[in-house]
Image (cartoon, rainbow over all chains, first blue to last red; front, side):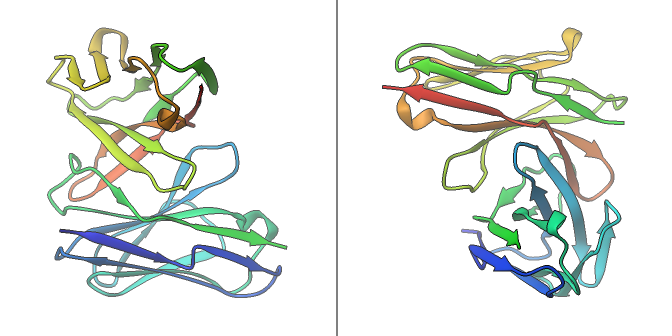
Length: 114
Length: 116
């Protein structure tokens, strides 16, 4: 069966520090991968998605970036965190079959920028 | 542009009551998919159901049922005989037809509290 691992679970970082969140998927090949952010009291916002190694699409301009160095690895990064980057970050995967495929989410990372 | 509206933000019920969570969507696509997800206090999102735009049959799964009405662009979710374990945030989502990926537009979620 497929599983998705996301770490760390919680993170407290000062403003201006770098960020690296990692997500890996097991049990499937060539998944579509996604990073979502959930700010307090708001819905989920798609940040990045990837349909293959090295292929990253950004949905919103921001100081975050994403990379996919391996088929089942997706990394969210920042060189300098802002207070507004605080939130709950969720990685997800879906089958490459298309838009009817449900997303399967990791357990999330709660990031607090102080 | 795609849009999902969950007008209810918080609902509180007593155990065993029935509760309906509303979802209204906007899309220009003729083919699309709708989803419901549950986010318990632990944080992970759990996939509950998927419905395609050509299938307006209502669906029942245990205490859960879904009412999809294309005429009103609604995809409502009813929990019958609610239980404390149903307490969670529930998200409705709409897929965007964009090739090989499942870009979902989510509503802002409904926080359901079921009191014993």
